[in-house]
Structures are given as structure tokens and as C-alpha cells.
Amino acid sequence: MAEARRAQERGRARARAASGAVPRGRRELARFAPSGRSVVTGLLILAAALGAYGLARGTSAFAVEAVAVRGAPEGTAGQIHKVLAHVEGRSLLSLDLPALEAAVEDVPAIASVRFDRGFPHTLNVHVVPERPVAVARQGTSAWLVAASGRVLAPLDRGARGSLPRIWLGRDVELAIGDVLVGAPRRAAGAVAPLGGVRLPRVASVRSSDTELTLVLRSGVEVRLGDGSDRLLKLTIVRRILPSLTGAPGYVDVSVPARPVAATLYSQVEVEPSTSTDP
Image (cartoon, rainbow, N blue to C red):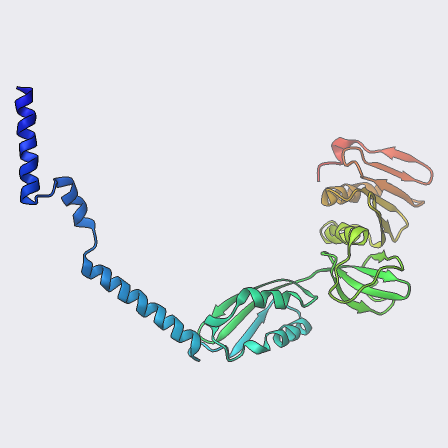
């Protein structure tokens, strides 16, 4: 019986093959397959879109008529317009935006930039400016320095008196747009968080490969150790400073869990439970 049933099924299969019949499962799949006509239509639409895009790139349909700079100070915005002057008249679609970003970021006062195409005729430029945090001093020369360590501009002696001073060795050569390296760069990074901590005014920064020290106008030294966890350490310092009255001293937060405060006449180890929680 089983042999007869198998022979019968083989016979049915040969009959379906001879008649060209398609199994049901395949018929279901065939219903969702695109027809030859729809494939051709899709290819024609794609070709038309690519042709229109290529035509738009090469014509004045989207030519740049205005460059809108946002987020930059007035003087810096003028520099950016000069850098981008060559894009006017070119199609928005043909612009190499990564190359334009690199060109604008070469302007010393610019930390980062982002572009977007404002169709039909505007190139929008969104700028994040560098943030000045210190003055680098070398003899009678002075330069404004950003949190990134970038040299922004030369300064007259005594200018920007509210910013801390970073003293440079005689062998250091600087030009506008250069970035400080080594200990001076770490010093610039050390004072970068000061705006959010409200410490008393910092007069200068001393820096080495292993130690960062802020010297306040009052004469108190703030010893940060290797410069890690700066925001936490500065927050601890802000809480401790009111206890230092009278003679200048220091606050050592090189180990945030074991801060030490001292004047010329006394030394106090502050309780960690009250000092390491910002």
C-alpha cells in the first residue's frame, strides 16, 4: 500500500511538471514579485531624479546668494565671510561642506562649525566660538588663550586683568592660531571650569608634568595635583576657602577624598564626608 501511494504521488508530480503548474507556495510568492513593467518604471524614475540632481548642481537654480553666520562675534563673523566669499554663485548642491568646515575652523576664534543648506539660495553657518580662559605671558608679551589651549589674539600688557596668567618659558614660540602644548596646555584646561565654580579671582597658574597649582589674588594656593577631576576638586576648594582667614595658605585637593587646608600658622585635614560631594 505504501509503495503504491508513493508511486501515485510521483505520478502526480510528473503530471504537474508536464502541465507547467506552479506549486501553491510559489504562486503566493509570485503575487508579491514586481512585474517587469514596474521595474522598468522604477528605473526610469531613478534615472530622471539623478538627471535632475546633476542638472541642479550645474545650474544657478540653487546658487548661493547669501551666507548667514550665527553664533559668532561680529569681528569673527567678518572673518568667516571672507573665508567663504568664494562660494557665492556656486550651487548649494555642489558645495564640499567638510572642506568648508575645515577652512572655517582654521579661524582662531572658532571652536567648531556646522553648515546646512537653506534652499534655495542661503548657506547657513552655525558657529561655536572658542572660550577665552587665560592670558599666556612671556616677558612683556601676552596672548589670549582659549580653554582648548588655542592662542586667540595678542594682548597689550595688563589687558584682560580678570583672567589668570600662564607664564611661558623663553623657548616657547607662539603665533595666532597655535595650540599650547605640555604643561601650559594643562594649565589652560585647569582654569577652564572656573566659570561654573565661582572661585575668588585667580592671579596665575603654575604647571608641571605632575602638578597644577592655581594662585589666587589673595595669595592662597590651590593645589590640584595631576589636574584630573578638576570640577570636583574646584567645588571642594570653594567650600573650604571660607575657613582660611587671615594669612595666606593653601588648599591641597590632589586627593579629593583627603583635602588639606592650611594657613601659615595651622594645618587642618578636612573631613572627606563633607568635602567630596559637590
